[in-house]
Length: 362
Ligand SMILES: Nc1ncnc2c1ncn2[C@@H]1O[C@H](COP(=O)(O)OP(=O)(O)OP(=O)(O)O)[C@@H](O)[C@H]1O
Ligand SMILES: [Mg+2]
Image 1 (cartoon, rainbow, N blue to C red):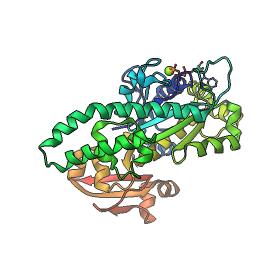
Image 2 (spheres, rainbow, N blue to C red):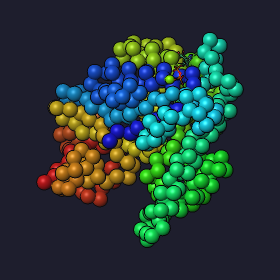
Image 3 (tube, helix red, strand yellow):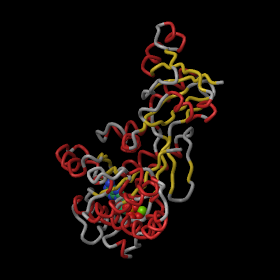
Image 4 (tube, helix red, strand yellow):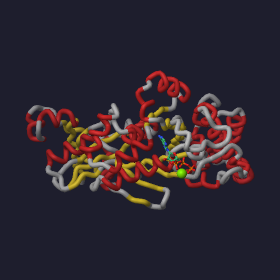
């Protein structure tokens, strides 16, 4: 159940460059589960330095990171919902993703053609969002007769709520707002709309694809960040990311330092996706593998056990938990136990990011 993110944007803004960097990064790190399910879907490991350290401590044979699935689609243009450009026929590919990531061009290269009418990030963002809103309106229009039929003779509260939410959603979208931004204000519960797989109901992230030199322009970044807040903004140069993906870890670190960059943009993107969906990581470790697992923030210990195996949840007895930081400062589980840092937790325990866990189950 990896987190999935759909990539959207105008044509020629760097979506595929970013996507290729993502999938290559996954392919090159030998221990990362990498898969191309379809040519436009890539699964990449979420970089997590804690995993490598755990693997060393336990002499794990392999490392398995949490993963994020990215879907790349063809660019959207103004009027796509009316069939302009390639139309919005590819939006179907990202209907079932958990979040939407819009790539926005900031880089300047005059040799890369801009689509007509495109120049400023603000207008480009609006063009794409408008097409997504129109696509959702089409989906709702198509669903309306079915919802009306289903609710005519039913008292099923869920069906009735979905139908009512669908009607209210049309009003929000007609006002030019996404459901992500406007549903709460209109009293719509997004969970009632889940079965419709509406695009604008998903959490949004923005990737600003910049020239490498612009990445140190804090003023520009602040401006762009404000443009999309409260959605998260990630700043990267897709071309540099693609280069980084070709390099070994040491060489990549050198290139990052040379360019004055900290964390690779791809790591930031994976982390932002986790945050947008309210996910966090817990860890398991042993000689066979050290592994990062994703769970919703607020999940209990039995729920975390269920991510590994449903039987672990059903037969949950207790969990031995050491926080990653405590484990690392103690140097081993035995030492952590001796220092009183290993806790036995029961069914009520709320998992924390970075918990290193061993479950006991029947
Ligand atoms: N940060 C950058 N700086 C300079 N050039 C870039 C940058 N990112 C991407 N490009 C270039 O922009 C061009 C278009 O990139 P890409 O094919 O990834 O766009 P796209 O959004 O996938 O387009 P489409 O919608 O047509 O599929 C490529 O030539 C690519 O090398
Ligand atoms: Mg492309």
